[in-house]
Amino acid sequence: MSITTERRSVILVVEDEASYQDALNVGLSVEGFDVLGATSIAEARLLVAARNPDLILLDVMLPDGSGVDFCRELRDTSLTPVIMVSARDSELDVVLGLEIGAADYVTKPFRLRELTARIRAVLRRPPTTVNDELIAFGALELDLSRRTVTKNERAIELSRKEFDLLVLLATHLGQVVTREVCLDTLWWGLELADSRTLDTHVKRLRQKLEDDPGLPRHLLTIRGVGFRLDP
Ligand code: CA
Image (cartoon, rainbow, N blue to C red; front, side, top):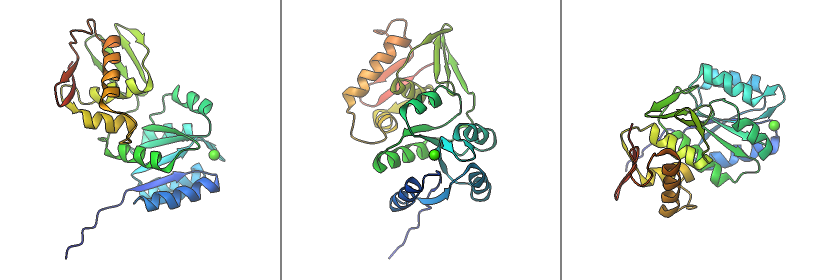
């Protein structure tokens, strides 16, 4: 008989609404996480220092300040990924427009299943030191924290998914990223998308990034495997 003990990831939930705090505490514990709770930024600051959580779920509106400011503070002091939780889509739009270095965003009300899938996807990502990281190659420049892309210094409009896909490929520049990893990262492993949807996103990205989308130089399909972004 063998017993394997796997280390449980520690999630710090920074949330002042008791109903969400309770639901997340129970729900995430059931999903196999160790959950720490903080109802204010001051409390969160102490827990980050004392317990070094693996991931922080951070509400935008907190009694002693803004989650946005706290996220910025964390990016200067810690590598722990942050998922921002906003109460409204309009609030999310504001947060998305700022460069705060969050790993992902969710809007209340969210489904526990979607949230845990996103948490797992973020935890699987290789650690970064991103605050204002730039990835530049050819005529393209990606600003990860501003979520902007320019080609020959002209801004290119990308959808959220297109940007996420580009970042995934750009952070593995010159390496093949499998279709499975793309689907998992973009749709958090949920069966919302099939391979064809992924191909549609790749096609749109090519149309926006490549000089000749029919003869791509950067965004290459590796048949039967996945995609590779070449510098
Ligand atoms: Ca709140």
